[in-house]
Length: 189
Image (cartoon, rainbow, N blue to C red):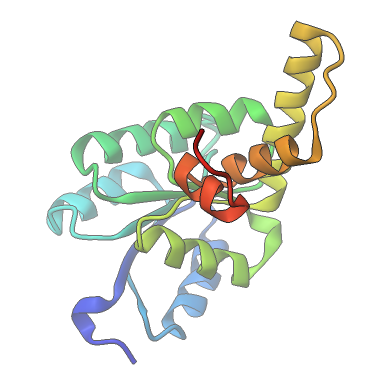
């Protein structure tokens, strides 16, 4: 077990109380994660963040809350503005590009779908806590499909090599250019 000061401190925000209760039960079983609070609205979540002076590692947010499709986006922007060191993980059912792009632009460090299960959630939280980005496979696929459609629309049909596809996939998964080069053994020219 990790020492208490090495715990990953998280906060969760989702308007479905039953989901929050289930996630709380899941998190309480993890020895390296401490749940600071779970909230069903952005106001209570921001109050809790202010009370602990932003001393959390990861905020797990839903996109749509209480009939507001922009609630998660607005909350992500507030958190990143006031507490830029907090990593934001989006946990949602929305896999459309119209949700993904604005959240990534707002500073979301990770994005996963609710239907994927506890293992991916825990993996994403741990990745964000050590400074990595984490985007679920379904999200990467959506981004890649959208990118492919834009390239085809703007430039006509473009044939990418398998190596170019590998590079795009790794970039879509959040790897930096240096990490992509290391993984694919690309030398600088």
